[in-house]
Length: 182
Figure 1 (cartoon, rainbow, N blue to C red):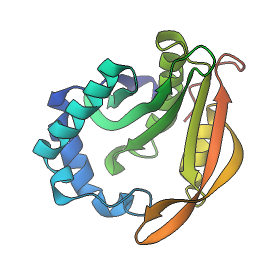
Figure 2 (cartoon, rainbow, N blue to C red):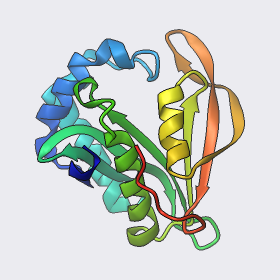
Figure 3 (tube, rainbow, N blue to C red):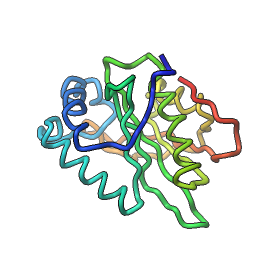
C-alpha cells in the first residue's frame, strides 16, 4: 500500500530493525552492493553507521532517511553527495527495501518523497542516481519518478571481485509534475 509509506530522518534506534533486514537479505543484496564486513550486519555496526550518517547530515553532505510502512522500518532512502552551492545544488539518491516489503510500492513512494525533501527542504535543483545495468526493478522506480538515463559509468564499482558498469540517471527538480510512483 503506497499510502502507508513514509520517510523520516534516520535515528540510532533504527539500528535494530535495519540490522535484522540487512542480515536476512545479505545474499539477496550481494549482486547490487559492495561486500561488507560481518559487523555491518549487527545492531552495533548499524549504530556506528547511523552515527556517521547523522554526522554527515549535520555537516550538510547527506540526508539519511528510513522508509516506513506504517510505523515499521522497511528500508532506507538517502541523499548523498549533496552539493548545496548556488551553481551546483544537487544530490545523489540511493535506496533499498527489505525483501519482506518489496513489490509493495515502497521504493517508488520513498523516492518520490525524498525528491520532495530535496526540492523543498534542501533547496536542490538536480537529483542523480545510478543503477547496475541489470537492475531493472530499480530502473523502473527511477523512471516512474521522472528520472531519465543519461550515460554509462564504465567499470565504476567493484562487486563480487568484478568491476561493473552503472547506468547514470538524472532528474531536474521542479521541471516535471511530482509523481510518487511505485
